Amino acid sequence: MGDRSLTEEAWEAFEKSVIEYQGQPVGTIAACDPDIVALNYDQCFVRDFFPSALLFLIKNRPEIVQNFLEVTLKLQPKTGQLDCLKPSRGLMPASFKIESRHGQEYLKADFGDHAIGRVAPADSGLWWILLLRAYLISTGDTDLIRREDFQEGIRLILELCLV
Image (cartoon, rainbow, N blue to C red; front, side, top):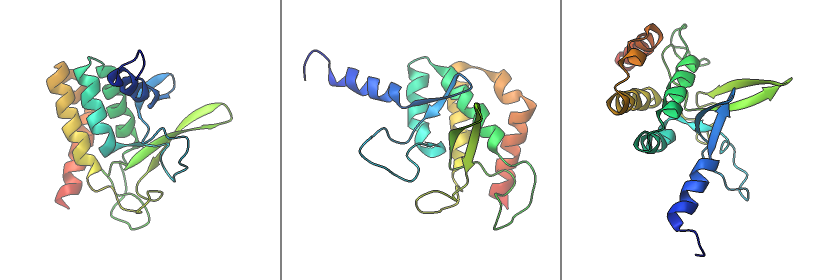
């Protein structure tokens, strides 16, 4: 094991999984294994980020969780109806990744199109709401959840669930 504990090694690996968008940490990638080339391991999955987010909240690093909540909310379609070719209004992406084009960073959402099983992310919105609640309990930041864009995002998720 050497001079470092397994906990220190695990934390270092965890820190290496953090991805940044426009200079801000916004999530963690699915896997950091350089020996495995997988279809979407370079993406941040909404469901899979949940336990990571809880750890960030425990470690008093809520800014990563807030950034994640804001970024994924921006990826939520705000218009459109149920259509088999486009994500439905209110649907949260299964995952997202950061892409660079012409020196600019962009967020690319995956609504199940590139996922290994090509499954629609029906649960992503609920994971997002649970994480928002955990963030509120941890930080007491009621201003974030009271923001108009967050209230609209919550409403759209619940509307989609009721459809």
